Length: 113
Image (cartoon, rainbow, N blue to C red):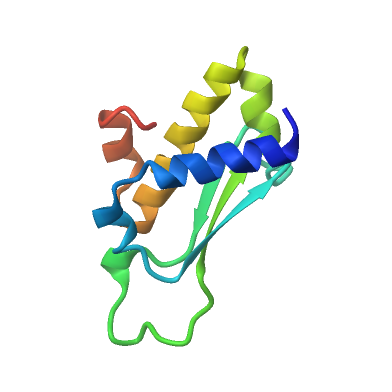
């Protein structure tokens, strides 16, 4: 799968998030990269920033939070295009949930682990 095709899957996964939630997303940017950091080569996605639940009066003038979805590990773990579509959607929802302050334990319980 080309990078452009994968980027389109990420965009489609973001579009499937209910509008009432995407309207609440604030100061966050989503990126696609080919590979994760060398210390975690199987990482599918990464949220970096301050979750909405942790922001206070001090939160102003900061760079956007960053959600990165990694193409390489996703393609290596999936056997078909359908698998890539499903895994990409799970990963996008997982990382967006971190933006809302939902931790890994809760995400695993909800089936987005």
